[in-house]
Structures are given as C-alpha cells and as structure tokens.
Image (cartoon, rainbow over all chains, first blue to last red; front, top):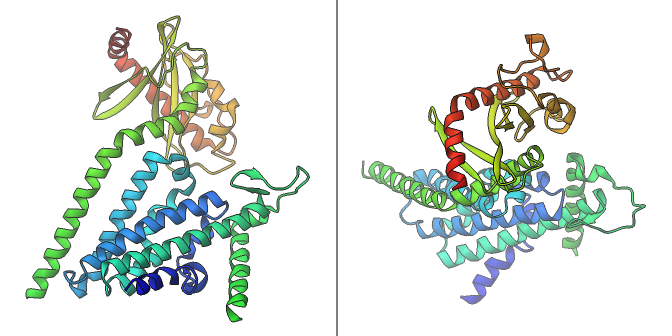
Length: 197
Length: 197
C-alpha cells in the first residue's frame, strides 16, 4: 500500500516528468520561464490545482456520469484555478502581475485535465493526491530548472542576484520566446541522453 | 432517461457548489485584493501626483457612487488641511481602457498632474502616455473649466505622434475627471470635512 503510493508519487518526478517526459503543458513551460521565480510560482499554482482537482475528481469518480465527465472535470478545475487566481491577487500581487494571463490558462493546461482523465478518474483519493503531488512537484522543478538556465544566461542573475561580474554581457536571446524553444529542446535532448543509460 | 437525469443533476449540483465556493473565496479576499491593487497600481501614480503632501493619501480616502459607478477619492493634506484630491477615471484607448489618475487642487480647481495607471496600449507607441512624462505634464496647471482635447480637435493638448488615439483616450479620461469633479464637488467637500473630524 505505502509502496504503491510512493510509486505514484515518484513517477511524476522522473519517469513521467510532465514537460520533459510526457511533453505536456508546454504553453506555460515556454511562456513563463524567463526567471526562476516566475517558473516556480507558476509551478506551485499548477501543483495546488492538480492536487485539489485530482482529489475531488477521484472522490466523485463513481458519481460523475461517464458522458459528462469532461465537463465535470472542467468545472472542478476551473473552480480551483479561479481560487488560485484570487489568492494570488490577494497575497502575491507582484507575481500575479508577472504571470498574468497564464494563471487563468491553467484551466486548459493538459497536465491537469490529463491527470484527471488518465489517473484520478480511475483511482482512490489517496493515490490521486500522491499522483497530483508528484506531478506538481515534477512540473515545478522542471519550470524552475528551465527558468534557472534561461535567467542565468539571459539576464546573468538567479532569483534577481547577479551571478557573474559586471562585465557579463547578458545573452538576451535566452529570455525571449525563441530561446525558450531552444532551451527546452536542449533539455529534452539531455534528458533522453541520461535516460538511455 | 435515468442517465439523462443523473447527468443534468450532477452537473447542476457541481456547478452550484463551485459557484458557492468561489463566492465565499471572493468575498473573503476582496478587501485584500483591493488593497493590493491600490498598493501596486495606484499608489505610484498617487504618490507622483500628490508629491508635496504631509499625509498618506492612501489612508485618507473615501468612496462616492454616481450613476452606479463607485469612485475612490484620495485626499492630500498640507499643514493638516485638505489641499488636493486624486481619483481615477477611464478613457477608451487604442487597445481598451486607459486608467488615468487625476490630481486636482481643491482651492484653485486646477489640475496638479495626471498619470496613466493601467493600459494595454502598444508598447513603445501608445505606452509613452505612461512612460514619457512630457505628454502627461501638458495637463499640469490646466484649469477645469472646459474639457480636454487634442489640438486637432481644437483643444490645447499636443497629441503624441503616432499615438493619436491613445492621446485622445487620455484626454477623454481627463474630461471625464473634470465632469465628475464639477458634479461631485459639494459632496467631495462634505466628505473631506467628515474625514478631518
């Protein structure tokens, strides 16, 4: 029992790491990872939605009729996304301004709906929470890592503190949109190389 | 038939529950969100306009409702006496609403200064209304007897080149501020007297 919970939790951290292994939810991955702070903030918001929606979907899995399950999932997910949006406005307004439109867009993030459909709709609540937590942390770490690479090369800082001397010329390409694709591609490549061994 | 009913019932109950939850969260975060918006979006504009006051205009504020629209007024004091008031109006720009904070001298009924707060104008073109002080400074010291309009419309304001619509939007917001102030002046004075006590 405890073993299988651990398994559901850890699969999100490596074997099914959302952006790099499942290659899902790339919109926020590409759009908000100009800095570590934005990446982790976005990741945590998504994690909260994932855990809550997974739990509720799993709890209601025997009540929700199969034909309207997607509609029900969307209602549940949209509710939690709106809650996150309100809470972020109330407590971390600066981060909310930076992430902007990408917070409401968590509704259509395919990781959230994907986990509800593929996992939470078929498994018990405690398993669904473990799954949501694992996927969420994996997603947060991926965004943080991508943000760290892009921020350090593109702006020469990590979490706003300068890394290199004053002579450092920021490689601004990395914090712009094309840099996101290049960086994601290189990280996918790296992940595949490591995974091969 | 039974399936049909269960589909309708489940979706309805779920949506109603979600609505109730969101209403609760919203009513609990509303005040905090309002404060955050004040702090991050309006405070810089208010501080810039009412620069030589001895109080904190963010604290000394009151609300008045006209035609179903609620406006917040921020009072600036000098030597313990109310000297100026600032409030926000909206004008229609090139890409949507432009928020304009307008500061007015209570004694002379002239504009102390204006600052664009929120906008979604084209970066580098219409956004100069906010970033380039030379446009907004044209409003300083203007009397409130007439409205404001750009020179091509027979007014006194030089439009920003390439951003005529934005310039007109700002003038429209300033004109609305003038109308609002003229209309509400007795009430504003009343509120200020109350505030002092």
